[in-house]
Length: 239
Image 1 (cartoon, rainbow, N blue to C red):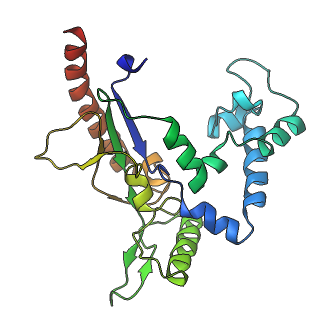
Image 2 (cartoon, rainbow, N blue to C red):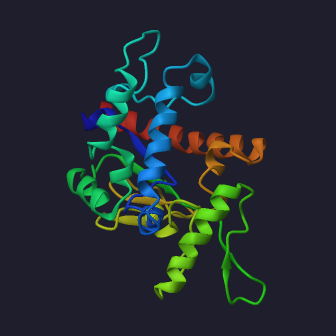
Image 3 (cartoon, rainbow, N blue to C red):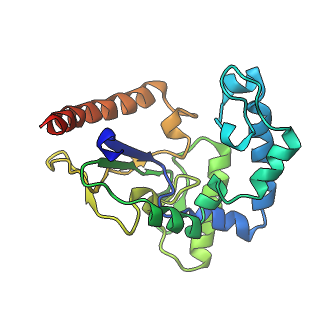
């Protein structure tokens, strides 16, 4: 029920798919990445140690145990089912998958939408090339560099990326209305309030190789923003 939802926040989200998937597909890396990702998630989802490090909550696919239960599917069966379904992040990251999802989801006029793009890319001092200099995560440096390389090779304009999602895709679904957020503009419901692009890679918002105080401040500031609109939302719902 949309009247129970006040806001939606997308952080580094591939709202229009991501070039990283197409780059991985080009280099025939998708099957390998899916194999390691699904197997890791399956092991972590059944292990007490794994759940302390990262719990992907893939109970609906049988890969993980539900909280305080041992109800996951047999490991091989669960992993195999992941390769046979499009109901997964691997498909959602493609241009086609994102288009299908965006076609199924409509903007609600009473809900506030927020997006936070991140960018790990800056131009070199001579202004001739783009480099992923705003990340200390070696994996993100590699993926960001591959995405930039493909852009240059295909003659595409570089808009920056966070190592997995290009900045344009993380701003708003291209079929939906949006407003650039500024301190002077009032927040609007029924449109994407696109926040200023932040510096960092795909792991920065979760504190990966990031300053702890800055990560905490980011969420505290956004929560204050959400609380301010929640009061307005609750008041309007009661009228």
